[in-house]
Image 1 (cartoon, rainbow, N blue to C red):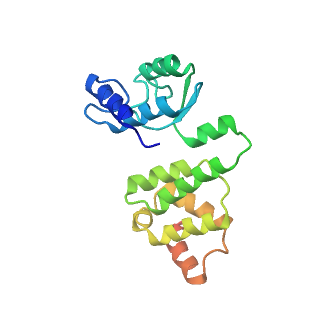
Image 2: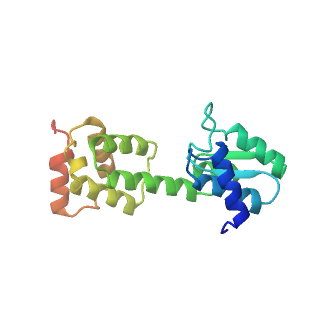
Image 3: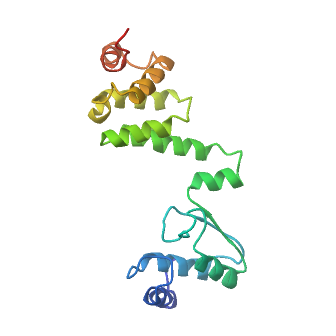
Length: 192
């Protein structure tokens, strides 16, 4: 929806008096909220956002009370907040597998693209909840273990070594002979 003049004016007014959502002097979130108030159907709103400008200061899993009351008054419904799309899909479409796979892909990509040791450790911690990877996912991860210096330089760290060793043991046929040798130089147990 392209906001009309009335919606833009309402958003400007919201910002001027300091009503949520948004930061003082920033109009973007205010325009989005005003568009929802104009265009959305009456009833409940399922809001998917990790943006703190919409969330309560007391609970990151609840929408700001002002917005909740405004929606209830204007649309006769409740605002249900979801921090991630996977949370929404899990609650409303529990049989769908897409959300979990998408989240896994995002976490894999975070490790593949890791630009720091801290990011590498964090990404491995987040991937720790998964026990199975497709062949392509495993190949992407194993290639990153060899190509990404931020991962390779800390290959002796127990979490990094443990993660990649287990992955390689589950998929020993994915790397060619030369890459398998390089991998083992960096990630095999020193005691072996």
